Length: 258
Ligand code: FPP
Image (cartoon, rainbow, N blue to C red; front, side, top):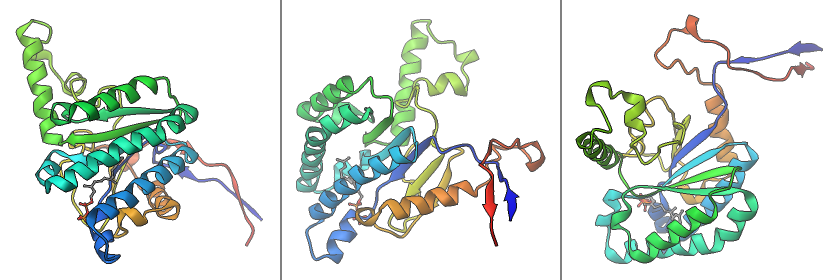
C-alpha cells in the first residue's frame, strides 16, 4: 500500500464558460425543427447549472445569444427570446432557493422591452445569491463589448474621470460587461467546432480551451466531468516558465492499493 500525494499546477475551476453549440444539428438528427433543439438545449442548461454547483464552480458563463444571432430567421430569434423568458420564469424560484445569481452581459439595447425587464427583475431578485453566478451572454459579441468599453472610457476621459496615459489592462477591464467577474479558467465548446466565435475575447486570454464533438442537447454530467478531468491535467503557465510555477493545490493523499 503506497501513500501518494499529487501536486497540481492548475488553479481550482472557479469560472467555467461554455459555447453551447449544436442545437440545430441535434434537432435535424432527430427529424425535428431547429427550435426543438433549442428547447432541449434549455433542459441541458438547467442540468449543467446543477452540476456546476455540485462541482463547487462559482461562475458559469453561457453564450446564449450572440450579436450575430440577430441575423437568424425571425421566427427562430422569437423562439429563442420566448425560451429565455420561459427559462427566467420557470427557474426563478430555483435560483432564489439555490443561491444562484443571474448576471447578464451583452448589448441589452437590442433586446425587447419585455426581455430587458424580465432580465433586470431577475438580476435584482437574485443579487444576494452566493452559490453560483450564472452569467448569460445575450446579444453579446466580444468585439462589440470591447468597443462599448472604449466608448465608455472616452466618455469618462472627456469628463476628466479617466486618464488615458495611466489606463492599463486592469482599469480597462472594469469597463467591460464582466466587471467584477473573474476571468474564465476553462472554456468549453460543444458540437465539434473549434473556434471561440467572438465569445469573451478579452476575458479568455488565458482560459484553457476544451472542444467536444457532443452536441449541446446531449451534453451531460459525464461530459462535464470529462472536461473537468482534462482541465485538471493542464499546466497553466500564464506566460511564465515551468520552473517559475508554484504548485497551487495539493490533493488529499490517495492510497494506491495495487
Ligand atoms: C447554438 O446552436 C445555440 C444557440 C445559438 C443558442 C443557445 C441557446 C440555448 C441553449 C437555449 C436558450 C438558453 C437559455 C439560457 C434560455 P445552433 O442553433 O447554432 O446549432 P447548429 O450549429 O447545430 O445549427
